[in-house]
Amino acid sequence: MRKQIVAGNWKMNNDLAETRALISDLAKQSKISNAEVMIAPTFVCLGTALKHSSNLDVEVVAQNMHYATNGAFTGEVSASMLRSLGVQTVILGHSERRAYFNEKDNDLAKKVDAALSNNMRVIFCFGEELADRKSGNHEKVVESQIKNALFHLSDDAWESVVLAYEPVWAIGTGETATPEQAQEMHAFIRSVLASKYGNDISSEVSILYGGSVKPNNAKEIFSKPDVDGGLIGGASLNAEDFYAIVNAF
Ligand code: PEP
Image 1 (tube, rainbow, N blue to C red):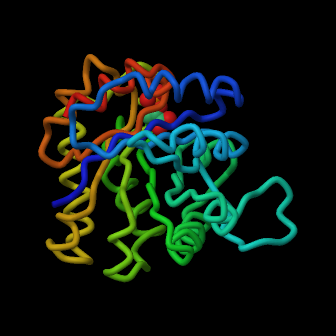
Image 2 (tube, rainbow, N blue to C red):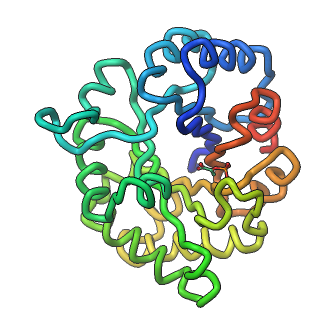
């Protein structure tokens, strides 16, 4: 059975005090769903988040990492450094990394390999821009993002990969893909995986939806058969909203 996951991407929000405060708010929420819960603070707050969430049923994950083990990459952080902190999962390929930091499919393929070879789990993000959707190219774009960054992986590697479909036009805009659009794309993604890896693997990969998921739309989106959870930006910065989404399963 594939896992249901709700992951909060805090992006470049929350200093140390705010991280502690939000985690203490998260501790006051009750979880009534079986979904795995993750939060992704900034690099500088990972240690504090790990320490303060140790009694919670929440995994602290990273928002990014470099593909090299170490060396002359000023400002970057490696998989082994994250592992040394106790971080076991990393988000890769977020559209903001692609757009503002010029991350390309081949960089992401290297990052995925580095994470997996350090026994980390990867949440791999991708999704089309508005122009791709309008021109009807959204499936082609998504297919090539998946193929270029992930189709070199072995069958076994997929046990450690979670996919996050995030249409760029829906991130932080208040505009959400309809539950039907999300389902249609998630089913397509599963068929792309099945074309190379077969149905057994493709049906076991969790595919999250991301893009303006809020307490008032989560239930309907999560009710779709190929949607296994959400990557949540804005709404993950408020503990009540975040747990309303977690509990939408
Ligand atoms: C995201 O950053 O991955 C995201 C989905 O953001 P938001 O929920 O704010 O649209």
